[in-house]
Image (cartoon, rainbow, N blue to C red):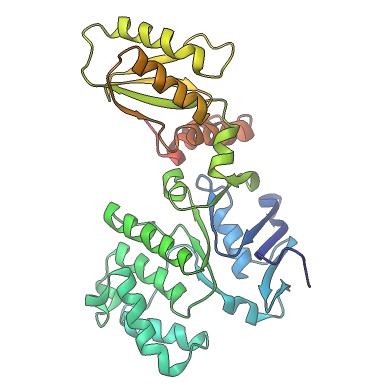
Length: 352
């Protein structure tokens, strides 16, 4: 099938998966463009893995279609043909499982041969991807001795070893410590700069917000939002501005009132009773505003004119996105799930 949108490499069209009377995924549609990172975000049980499995053909959709680009055209992936379309993709679905008696070198060499990677280049390719993930000292060790995090790293490079154009990664940072998570995020961005397209899922907002070009939010099998982070943030009614003063005032309420009078005319919001609050945990003042850079600049200028000494003046990257995420998830399941807001906050990683 020829098409005008030549930058689209995966097209999901009205995908649904039904188990009995339950829809795990319902009428899910989105397009993934070449060279971008898409983050599929949602709480546990939202339908992320089911969606990934339908792309990889581990599950057959009840209805809907998966299209994958091949030789310039989008081709329909069916359950009976076109296995070659999957060669364009590398998959990590759920927890990777390997034979304990095998080594990374053996496992990755096998996957490379299975995917038709040039035989003469397999050895150097295996060493290359092992170095990417920081397992070079373990290349000849049996996987049975590996930790969960090491197995997860091996799962990621097993999806990468045949040098696919597209990576489909289901919760790739599961089981990793903070240092390893940072390494994986750096690797994902490096692969993007090499021209790879990455479709990854996570139930944690911060994991995808740091790498994704666009975020698709899924809950109860429904796509509830899909856009760039900037556009999603703009849908929120307000953003949070952190203001840390050079010295902590003796009288916090008086300073809060002073900041309120200075800032309120420039926040770009109407019918809001209180703008400024004090966060005693971080010892900073926080001001709500409309997120507009012009308004942010005006606020900073007014603080300077009023001789307010500020050492930190910033908008946390995910502040408004977190709020929107919680609202979207809570809004769609309020009647069906009374703990929706708690689940949303857990997924956003901001539980008190």
